[in-house]
Image (cartoon, rainbow, N blue to C red; front, side):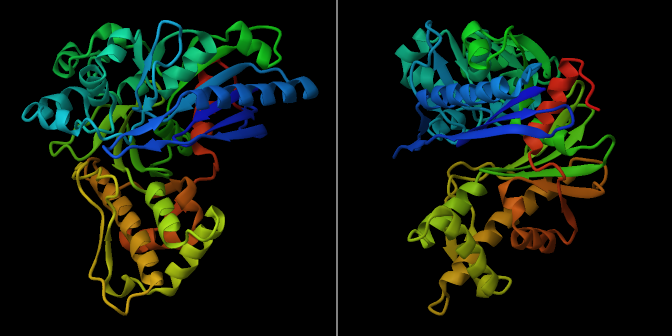
Length: 449
C-alpha cells in the first residue's frame, strides 16, 4: 500500500493506493495564491504545512481504523516554484510560484546567452523556471538569499517535511535551468550565469528513488509503528506522462490543468534548434520528455467563468460557460481570443504578451465571447501538439488527454476539429498519481500486479 502525495498549484491530494492503482482513501486540501501588481504570484507556505498535517492525520485515522499498513510514500509535485528555507527548516518567506513574472528583466539581460543556456539544460529561460526567480531573490531580497540554507521547490519542500532531508530528483532539477541535461549534474556554467551558489541547491538523487524515511512526528501522524520509506517520484507532468503510458504504447500525452502540457517521451535528450520545446529528464530511468507548455489553460477557463459568470458559483459558472459556448457557431461569428493573460509559452515564450479579444462587433453576444475564449485555449494546445510532433521522427499513433479540461466533450471536440485527428481520454482518472504509484512501486521493488 502506497500513500501518494500529489502537490499541485492550487491544491494537494493525498491518496492511499494499492499496487493495482485502486484508491482506498483520498483527501484534498486547497490553498490560495496572492497576485501582486508588479507580476508576483505568491503563496504563504503555512497553508501547505496545514494541508500536509491535515492529510496525514486523516490518512492515519483511516489506516488505524482499517488496520492498513503503509509500505511507502511517493511524492510528486508542481515544478519550478522557489521557496527560500531558513536554518530552522521553515520557509523564510512566501513561495515565488511558477507563474511569478517579476524576473522578466533578468532574462532579457541574458541576450545571446539564451542559446547557450538552452544547449546545456534543454530549456529556453523563462520566468516559469526556477533559476531566474532564484536570481531575483538574490538581487531584490538579498537578506532572504543570504539567510537561506537552500532554495527549493514544492517537491523538495514536501520531501524535507517528511524526512528532514534536502534532496531533489533529476526530473525536478531539470526544470531549474541549472541542470546539465547531458552530464546529469548541476552545471557550473549555468550557476555562474544566474549567479547562484551551489550550496543553495539540494543534493541530487535519481528520479524514482528512496531519498529517506519519515521523521518520528510524520510516522506518528500516519499511525505506523515504524518509519516509512519516502520516494521522490518525479515532477507532476513527468509522472502524468508515465501514468498515461501503458507498456510500449506509442502516444502523445496532453495533460490539461492549470497549465496545459503536451509531452512525448524519448530515450535520449532531443533539443529544438528554434527553442520552442523543452527537454527534461523523465520520471523513469533513462527516459527524457519533450514538453510544450500553454501556461494559460485552466487559468483562462477560471478567468472566463469569473469575468462573464461572476453571479454564479464556480461549478455552475463552468456549466453555463460551456452551455453558452455551444450555442455560438464554430469561429464565434468571427471573434478571436488571444490566450495570453499571463504571457505565452510554446512556441513563442513571450511572458510580456497580452491577451485580447478582437473582431468584436455590436451583434456579438456573451455566447460568442465564451466560444472565442475556449477556442483560444484549444488553439494554443493544438499548436503545442504540432510543435512537439515536429521534434519527433513521425506522428504518434494516438493523442491521449487527461486533466480537468479533458472532462468536457465539447472542449475535446474543438481540439479534434482543430487538429483534424481523433483523441482519447486516459483510462487513469488520476494520471499524475498513477505515475507516482508506478515510480514508487519500482523504487520499493513491489510487484504492481
